[in-house]
Amino acid sequence: MSQDFHIVCISGTREKLQMAAMFASVAAATGEQVSVFFSMNALPYFVKDNAVEAPVEGEFGALMAQEPGVPPFKQLFKQAAELGDAKLLPCSMALDLLKISEEALDPELGPATGLTRFLNDAEGGQLLTF
Image 1 (cartoon, one colour):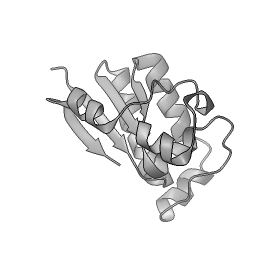
Image 2 (image 1 turned 45 degrees about the horizontal axis):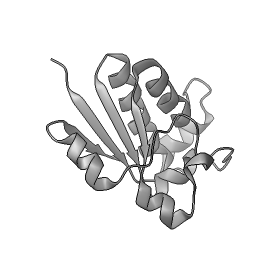
Image 3 (image 1 turned 45 degrees about the vertical axis):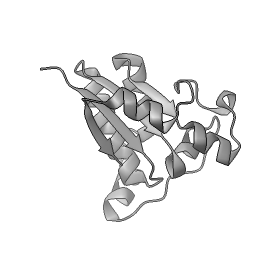
């Protein structure tokens, strides 16, 4: 049975971004429809050439940062978009507040989207928040 998954990323911590990315990439790779809405503290990590590392919340985040076999969350989101056609959507309000243009974002991200539109599109699917 096919399922639509709609993921809201608002946290800027490594653990939450990593789990959202793992969920998105696995769901997209298995043929599920996936959309990811990036807002608040998650959005700045998707600005081109942003080299700032997401802070860790605890021991597990530190382990992921050290382990060479753990793909970074940005790579997983990119794979979800490229291999599984996941939609990666920046929050229009967060872009305005942070004064970030759409052109400044990583190329995998789609058009700026408002929360009302995202929730309308998510109707009937699974909604997950990280």
